[in-house]
Length: 116
Length: 113
Figure 1 (cartoon, rainbow over the protein chains, first blue to last red):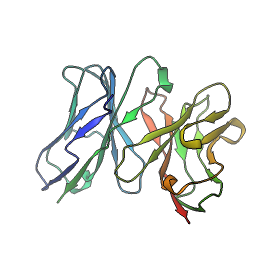
Figure 2: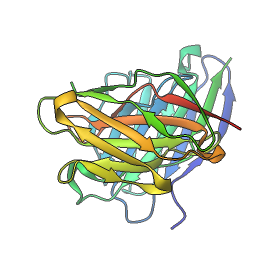
Figure 3: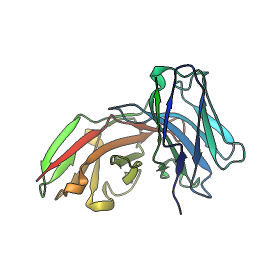
């Protein structure tokens, strides 16, 4: 069990550029979640997948954000036309369906994005 | 919507002293509650969770939490704090729309010698 991995760990970009982050969940975990965490705040939910289906999206996920999980394994989160307000830590988590709403989400180390 | 409030932004305790971190939830039915810890450069780690059964929950690293419906609280406790416990602590509740976690703003714990 290697845990949830995220790449890159840090990303610096200029305003208006597109960025893409990758998340590899714990193998056999079929639920995958994306959260955003800004300084001094708790993580905020963005979206989640069960297998390859995106089942829930937060209102925080504007049209500039898109997430995919094409084969039900790894996931990507793309931000188009980045803005300075997108600067945050982007966290990925995964869980194994079957535990109901009490199942444990395992978090990766996050990707820290800085938009200049 | 389900939410949690962590009233204390910062808490400082001496090493060896007891610790209690507060968490209040808003939800009509029995909530699914979690405590996570986040150390610098580390991912969020689950300490413990509650969704039914015994209201006193034991977790990892010597932590425990008690669910009190009458007070809408799920406070985290540890009888003797170690310097390595210095970190950010987050309380969270599962949303009623699915499986998303709604986190509090966190409590930053500082441990002094």
